[in-house]
Image (cartoon, rainbow, N blue to C red):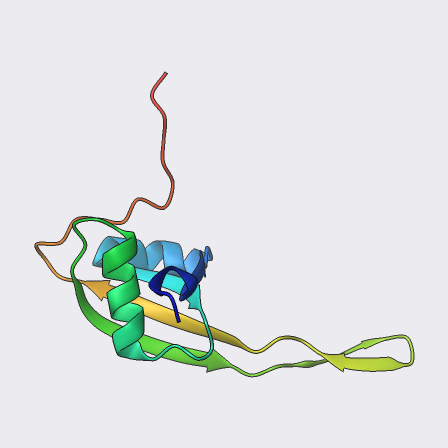
Length: 98
């Protein structure tokens, strides 16, 4: 698996935005990725970032109905990345100065 295929997208929620101040970032990652691979992918994707800790959460699929048809949502794996104190911050939103 390529390191740039591990991280899919950042998860932007109210809770994840409050944890940004503590140096924690939440990403949706590939379901086959393990913690060491996620750490390597984050450090490769963002320059100057040092990862201190990686926590993962696997969200199970939920059953959904549309009329009489029943299906399931996709399984998702989230990674909560904690950065070290001397690490640079990850710029999720690049603000352009005009």
